[in-house]
Length: 162
Ligand SMILES: CC(C)(COP(=O)(O)OP(=O)(O)OC[C@H]1O[C@@H](n2cnc3c(N)ncnc32)[C@H](O)[C@@H]1OP(=O)(O)O)[C@@H](O)C(=O)NCCC(=O)NCCS
Image (tube, rainbow, N blue to C red; front, side, top):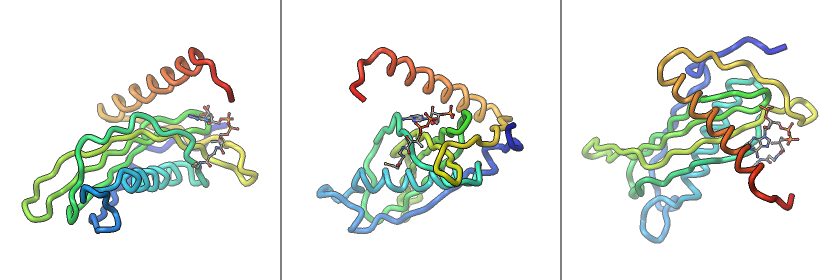
C-alpha cells in the first residue's frame, strides 16, 4: 500500500554556488560536468526528501545547456519533484546564473532526472504518491508522464544490445 502522499513543495530545494576557478573550463565559464554534478546533487536531495529513503540516479534526460555561466557569477539551482511512479521519481532542475554586481539573471541549464528509491537490500521500494495541486505542478506532471511514455516508445523501437 502507498504511504502518505506529499506535495512537491514538501521536498523542493534551492541551492547556491559561486563560480570559482576550479569550476571552469578553458573558456573561463563553468565546466559542463560541474553543472551536471550540482544538478545531480540537488535532484538527489529532492528525491530523498520525498521518499525518506536512499536513492540512486537511474536516468538523466533533456539536459539543455542554454547559456554559459561566467567566473565569479552566482548560481541558483532549483529542483522539484515532477512525477512519481512506483519506486521512481522524476525531478526537474533549473539552473540560473546571477551577475552579483548588476543583479541580472538568466536561465542557463535545465534537466530532468529519474531516481529510484531503495530498500535496505538496495532493491527498488515504493515511494509516497505525489499530491499535485497548482497549475505548474499539473503541467510538470503531465510533461513528465509524456517523457516516461516517450522513453518507453524509443526503447521499444531501438534494437538494444543490453
Ligand atoms: C536504478 C536501479 C536501482 C533500477 O533497478 P532495476 O532492477 O532495473 O529495477 P526495476 O526494473 O524494478 O525498476 C525500478 C524502477 O526504476 C525505473 N527505472 C529503472 N531503470 C530506469 C532508467 N534507466 N530510466 C528510467 N527509469 C528507470 C523503472 O521504470 C521502475 O520504475 P517504477 O517502479 O516507478 O515503475 C538499478 O538499475 C541501478 O542500481 N542502477 C545504477 C544506479 C547508480 O549506480 N546510479 C549512480 C549513477 S552512475
